[in-house]
Image: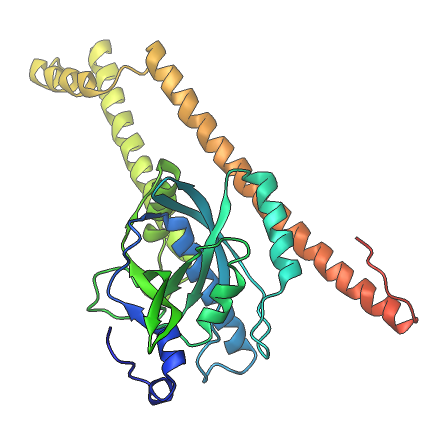
Length: 325
């Protein structure tokens, strides 16, 4: 175990033991991490950073974000599928238990097989206070995992800036203490996640423009290509019609080239093509509808929370206090 580099930590052996991280875990668990978790944590950090910049605190380092990771455990394999945010008191450093329990109930209704596997945070390294949060979640999961995302940009780094820690009981200076140990993990994806990640990667602004600008440019390029293809097909069709009417001389060499080109096209009138096309079309419509419902639900949830906040303030001024919804 390497010695802590922070002088404050080095002066307190107990704090150093709690925040230290060994080389690797000895539990034998296999961890599989889905890209959705990384996207959620990154989005959480970006939103908090943007809010801090809008409030005038852009010069200071953005505050750390916290949340829970959920998934399933099958034997010695732990698979992390999703995550949700947590509310942490910045003064006392304690979790909002009511918020956590409410989130758990909501996720259990939608994903009954998912359980809280641990929690996540952002930062370049493990902090002394992280063990307190880790122990607070042990009543939900007796052996939670800790996912740490480093938001600092390092161009030379090729690996993902994500580290997963487990907690193990080690004897330090004659007393047993929990410490964080690094665990190996692999990225596991399903078809829907691969499509989403690929879509986000292609829409990533590379010149400072917004995602909407990138999407508009992408769609404009596709429209221009289709328009050009349509115009060339029309020219070939008009030439063949004129040749059939006798207005143009018969050119067998050109006819063979057109026939070879047509034979390369798939047979779009087959029953298998129609079934595959309808399946892909329905899947696309379903994904569009799900995205629309998700956005509507999120907007409605924000509206209800704002309405409840306004209603509680108005009732407090009148001397009473009760929840409207």
